[in-house]
Image 1 (cartoon, rainbow, N blue to C red):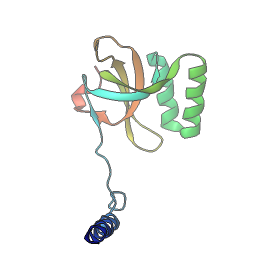
Image 2: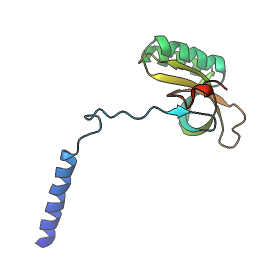
Image 3: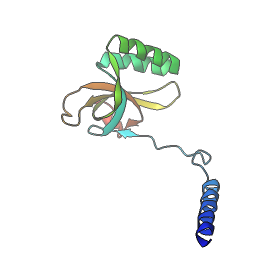
Image 4: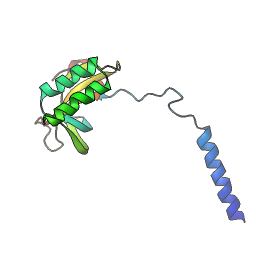
Amino acid sequence: MTKLKYILFSSLLGVFLYCSTPSLAQEGFQAPEPLWKRGDHIIVRAVCKDEKDIMEMVGVDTRGGLPEIMLLFKKKVHADECRMLSKPSMFVVYSIVITYVDYLKTESVALSLGTVDDENTIVAYTIARGRPASPKQKYY
């Protein structure tokens, strides 16, 4: 019988602690803004092949909403200019192509990416939330 009391007490204590812990969203928690620099690792799923393609995505991201961005990305995927990877993959930041403020008024960057094995060759481009680690590192 004491085992049953222990299990019941533990369960009630767990429920109490879960319910009494304030959620981060309720406390107004925001994740810190990423600061990007050459050599940083990033895990992405959506990439574009060329700088001109990512710059088109940036243009739509600054003035449009999510439906417009998704429509352009879908067109670029069909044209084989951008790609949705089958699983998130790790890349290395080669350079920051441009900084901008997106349609949600969030600081964002377009990044050129290298592979973990060869970070000195640009293999793709992507968009990420954040800003350069230093104003002097805005563009490489």
